[in-house]
Length: 117
Image (cartoon, rainbow, N blue to C red; front, side, top):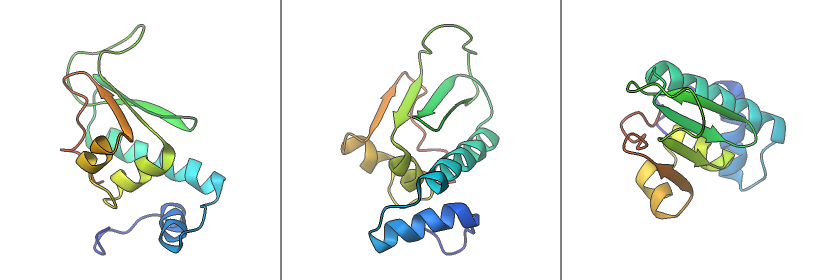
């Protein structure tokens, strides 16, 4: 994590817990996931990729063909802690993909150009 970037208290509390090797508060994780998804949507507006972080949130982002029905052709899915790690730069996109922590399908489903936030 870059010391130049300032995260909200909620995101920072989750990062602090992860740094301490303790389980972060579940509500804080939920709120941090949603906050970071909102940042991604602002940074990469559009509707061609669906980013899913179950059970806490999903957004559509990135310019391109708009998806409106059924399963989208470009999907990214990961767990909440991995999302927080890649969104804040604690782990790179490629590290998480290589480790099998991210399921990404479709030609636009690489978020590495937009992360960390």
